Each structure stands twice: as structure tokens, then as C-alpha cells.
Length: 86
Image 1 (cartoon, rainbow, N blue to C red):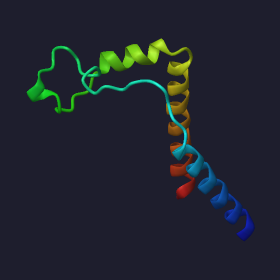
Image 2 (image 1 turned 135 degrees about the vertical axis):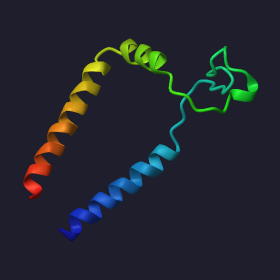
Image 3 (image 1 turned 30 degrees about the vertical axis):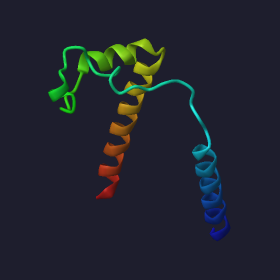
Image 4 (image 1 turned 60 degrees about the vertical axis):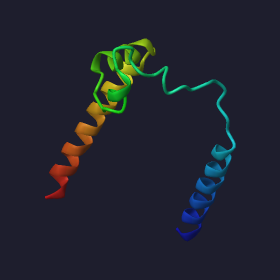
């Protein structure tokens, strides 16, 4: 088992180093992500944009089903853990 853990840690380290060198093209501007109705003084307020989030999730094919399946899977797993814990 020691060697399995060692291999896992080595692979994790190598993948982390690899991800440090991956660059994603494109310009990310913080001002462009702000909603036009937000003013400069309220730009740092954290509000939940549920409509925008649902629009983005619906825009990606299959993502809504994946989120639903993940929620159901976590709920089912939690229920089984709670039942078997006793």
C-alpha cells in the first residue's frame, strides 16, 4: 500500500506542476464581468445572480443533467452513509 500512496502523490505532484505551465488564451477583464447596473461603489458587493447562473447552465449542453445527477448522487450517498453509520 505504501507504493500505491507514493505513486499517487508523485502523479499528483507532476500534474500540479504541469498545470502551472498551462496557459489559457483570452483576455479576462474584471470590468467586463460586472453587470451594467452595478456602480463602482457596489462593484465588490457579493450578490447571487440566480437568473444569470441558470442562463449559463442552460447554455452548456448536458450541464443541467450533470448537476442534477450529481445532486441526486450526493444525496443518495449521504443517505446510505447515515444509515450505515449507526
